Image 1 (cartoon, protein in one colour):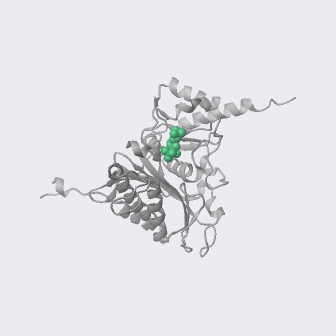
Image 2: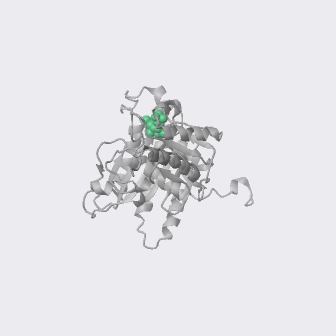
Image 3: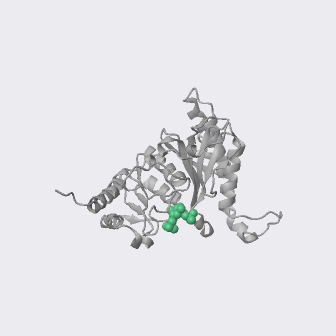
Length: 343
Ligand code: AFP
């Protein structure tokens, strides 16, 4: 068999090897962040397995039932929450976790852990039952408090600019993990037969502009006039409307192809639907690293000062030119609402 034989082709760079190589670029790195990323990747593999089996679990018995082993069958978002928290608790690098699934911050008991993680373990979960792509989103911060104690509220409410790493996993037609540590964005595709993520999308960049807009237009009567005008602008340009209702999947498509995803403020929800700490900040960090932009319509997402763990914020993310354009409409609305200067 020669080197060009199909069976002899190299399989590529695994996520573990890639993380190790990147760590070697920083001679003083302790390896803890690398280990944390590997812990998250391991939990993602387990969650991927559970997602792939979800149709079969339904056949074996409705959620809430006991399975053949006598264990309670749980909803996948609960399972994902347990898996990610357990991986980080066992890893030891994380002192405190903020999860979409839990009201309060979770203290892992790892008092020496240097990191804080904010995570949405399974986003788009209303899409699970209909076999549509879903995702996991995570942000990593370095704690500000001294090690040897539990992580504090202040540790959890840092600006997005303080993230040391962020990533997402999209469980789709293939499963991918995409992450950044502030030095570009890299994507890895899962090879189920080998149980490994392989580098498939090195140095990802997003197009400066695009022809896709993604928004839930079903609720557009509740949008501000500026948001509606921006959507009209997208239509005048004959953009394609693409909206899955799974943030990670919508974001991932637009990152690769160019476009804008938005979840604006509505009359009912003045701050929109999405959560700053474990949805918007992570994707904002990634999009900026890929050459794109993320805004709440008026302000860079990464510079918003968080006030509470589960706070929401309006979200416009994607190709820089399109987010700039959306901001223009929002700024014009703000200017016209301002009281006229008196002479
Ligand atoms: P679920 O996890 O409840 O499905 O919400 C998903 C999500 O947070 C985000 O992934 C979607 O982009 C967005 O909500 C969809 O919200 P709408 O259904 O209001 O469009």
